[in-house]
Image (cartoon, rainbow, N blue to C red; front, side, top):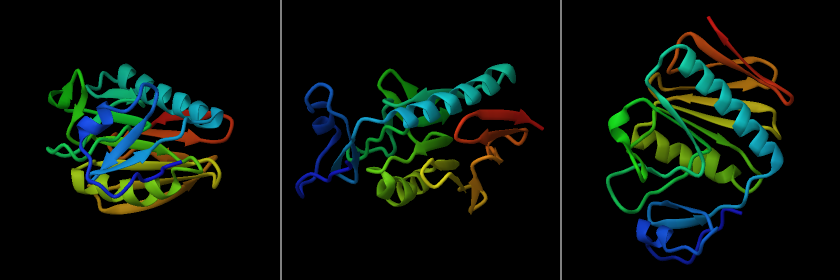
Length: 186
């Protein structure tokens, strides 16, 4: 349901002026409405975030994990506001009560039928240019995890059922499948 509103230029003020319960993202001054996530999306979101948070806690890492809806202000302007499904932020100075000011280190988007174009194209470009280090697109329909490691300038795809290495942590990978999400430390 990522519907673009009429051709005007919007700002973060317009996002904050939306009616209660209505969610949208702002990319380059354009508002994109967001559909509510389905049950499968929420299962994946919870499983992945739990594995990431457990790893961070058990290894005394300084990063924080935030789940949507969590505001990320990608650029130092008022024309970009996103709510990634999972944001991992290691630079605590980027965190404010309102959300994250600047690029998270790692972003995970879980594809919904209505978000496919946004996740694979528009957000990919925005996240890369904003300075995100690693970006995962988890696609349960295709049973595929696409990993963009912007620091190494590469992209790899992993099928559900196998372990996906985490680029920002050399000793951590997550097994992604339809039923379970396991993690391992090397």
